Amino acid sequence: MGRTMCAKYYLEETATEFEIQGLELDWSIVCWDADLRFMNGRFEYNRFRGTRWQMIHRKTIGRLYLKNTYRVLLTRARQGFIIPAVPRGDKSDPTRSPELYEKVSIAIYKISAFRRFDKAEFSKTPNCPLIP
Image (cartoon, rainbow, N blue to C red; front, side, top):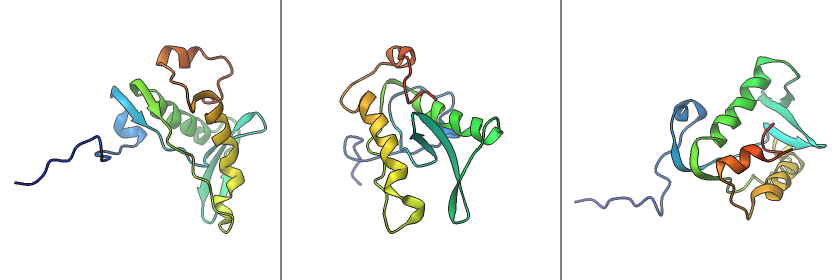
């Protein structure tokens, strides 16, 4: 007989925003990337095309899509969610510059790094940088 994997030690399932729509999970882990950045006191929406990041400008379907992607990912958990770490980037790779990730990392740290928010408190937080 084979051993059964224990969820305590292994990531058993991963899912995109499409796969988790309609689900209610106890806890979720959200991985953040440089597509949604907190810069100069506001969010910047970006997509990776070819060899570089491109800004998604106001009032486009792409911007709404990206915003809703994170909204879905951040609202599926009943107990809470974990953002384990924002990537640090790599100075030798212009597409993964540390500056792209630093501001998002700081914003996340300020509101949640060592705090636990329940869903009601999170949704009522004024000027919460994670609710674009």
